[in-house]
Image (cartoon, rainbow, N blue to C red; front, side, top):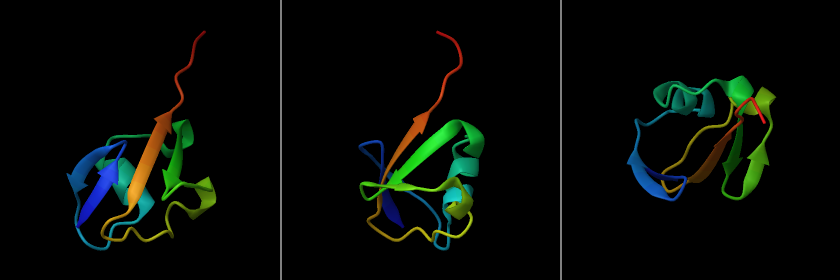
Length: 66
């Protein structure tokens, strides 16, 4: 499946949910905000939201410090 991640094309396996994508990217779901097709996805939905071909994601990581 082809998706867009932070403005770049990416190929992932069929059947991925957001938690699968975050694992593939080595991202901690507690430290990111995920936007799917210009809508913020609630953290409680990461394991349920199915990724579809052509979806567009923005993943923003929180960095501690100041």
